[in-house]
Image (cartoon, rainbow, N blue to C red; front, side, top):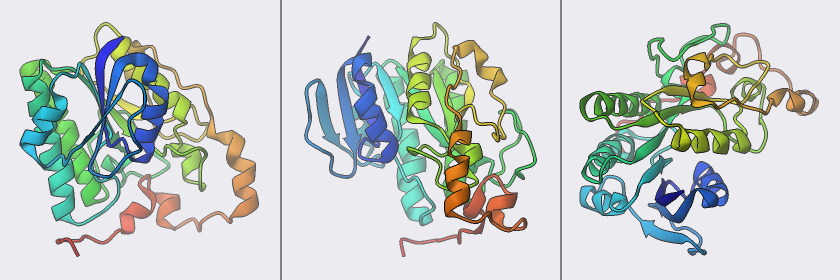
Length: 267
């Protein structure tokens, strides 16, 4: 059991899953977000924090022996916002972790690091990044930071390229990218319990029949996804039409992020 597990982005969708299910992993959960959160329960601490504030992040990480980093911007936004939360914020987090004795980190990367690959391609983690958005670029930066801090300092990180983590798939693309909450929680548990973590890239995806991603390189973690999006296929067929064969969400792994405009300012 960890003494104090930090969950950043605790007000978001992934953060709420972690808050609900990771209680048995630590004596105390330290929950952080720039947004307001529900009041602290038993075994919880609430710390509101802007990841772009270096001193605040150092205070946030101090005393933690595990970090689940779900914080930051999770969709395409202006570069200014992404720069603060996803680039400066990740650097701040890794420097704070280094100062705090290098607790293991679960870093929530994204499928949007490789969004310009086609859906008829099967990917392994060592294939070149092809980000589809400024958001995707920021996650490429985060992966590079994690890799460099491991090689330079020995900081262990599980880089998890999250697919689509919702209660159930919302469209046809998510029949390939869906990650169940149960599979996510099991992956986090394994990353903190395995004797040697290293710095693997793990596809955050359930055992979907239509999945595009090969996780064989991270088998040493002992994590095997159990859920399968295919059980939702009939319901999706019933409520929506398939996208045209040439639509971006039928061609590219990044889906509609391919068409997101680039915003240079906060507007």
